[in-house]
Image 1: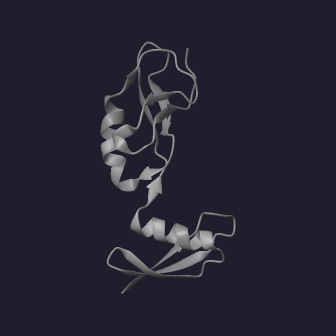
Image 2: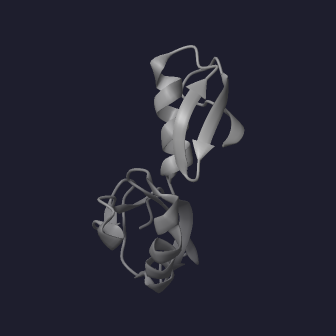
Image 3: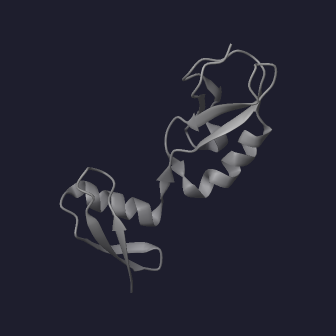
Length: 119
């Protein structure tokens, strides 16, 4: 059995959580002061999720790179595939904050959304 210690980020308390694992599966969680900690620890070990924030190419808009993010967390395992799609995107028309420029990227259920308006 392998043990790992992580810090929970679900609330301001920041519990130090002990996670006992067999392979890539959590068998025991300890040190959390609320149920959110256990859920976070299991997710972080078995299927960590992240909001991806980066930029895409912009053409003819007065800027060279347009800031974007995923509309929801995606699995860390999907990040390389999503980045391949993002590298192929070029925005050449005015966009507004929150506008989706790629829907359901790589089947993740998350859209790629603009985080800066550009005319």
